[in-house]
Structures are given as structure tokens and as C-alpha cells.
Image (cartoon, rainbow, N blue to C red; front, side, top):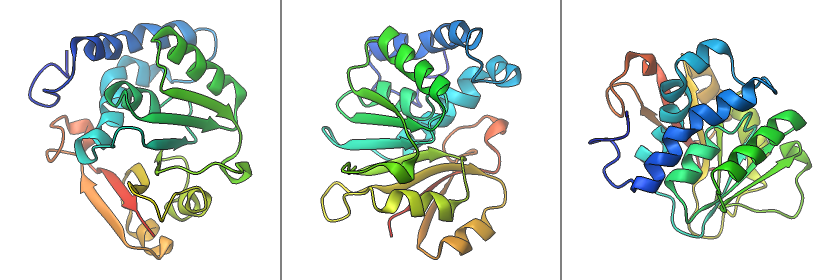
Length: 206
């Protein structure tokens, strides 16, 4: 399988099994609640699992830190990262109830004790703070920063800021956010598959 090798040498056998089970679980739930396109299901591990884990190749989240997945959809990048970082708590939020239903069921099936999910808009979250916010291409970077900035524990370590998976020409988005943006190219620098061409990991820390 794609993570059995040099890319993920520290994974335990239990983690590998959980990652490999993801496709069968999502196939089951996608027949009932459509959250992933057929094209993406055909390339599930690269388009969803490996793409999510690009974040783990750049950042090593400390144990006991808290990460919010903003606009998590069916659970990406939060679910694969929760498998990879079992001692980190991931709170997955989305405004669409059926997507949170899938996240809850996947987490239950894999016994992921470090995952919680909530149907809510990010701007409506109150009285919760996180060490970092992750997201995958759900909105322009300036909007993601606006929604997440007030939810970050900016004066407490570890502080990860906003971490996004995005693709294409990002020059306008980076300019518009008016903050320093760190950028990592995924293609060849992190993973070799050509699907990752023009895809990036971004970080905004304010």
C-alpha cells in the first residue's frame, strides 16, 4: 500500500490497517450519503488520504494539542490526520449535517477516540480555542483566515495558525490575505505522483 515505505516509516501496523480500511468504509457510506464524487473514489487514496497526509509531512503536531478541521466535508484532511496523530484531538466542523453524519460514523467504525464532529459554521463557534486550524480548499485564503483567526490560541504554544491544502495559481489569494504565508510544494517535494502538481500546503500565522 502507498504508505508502506519511505514516506511513512513511523506508522504502526494498527495505523496502516486503519488507513487501508478507509476506502471500504467510505464506499459503504457514500452509497447512502453522497459526499465523494465517483472520480475521486476511483483515486481515493491519492486524492483524499495521501493529500491529507501531506500536512503530516510538513508539520508534526504535538501530543495533546487541539486542531479544528474547518469545512471538513466527509472528513478530509481531519480523519487521516487523526489516524496519523492519535494523541492529538481533531474537531471536525461543517455546516452540512449529512457530512458530519459520515464523519461520526467513520470515527466510530475506526474507534478514533481523538475525533469529535459538529454541524456548525465556523463563524458561529463560541468559547472554543484551538492550537491550529486545518482546511482543504473550501474558500479563499482570506476568508479562511478571517473565520479561523479568532479560534486560535495565538498566545499559547504550540501555535500552528491556519494550515491549508490548496492548488493552482495562489498568488492572488496570498496577496489578498495580507499576512505572511508560508508555502510548501507537494509535487516531487513531498509526494511523487503527478496528481500533486500545482498543489501546496500553506500556513498563515498572523
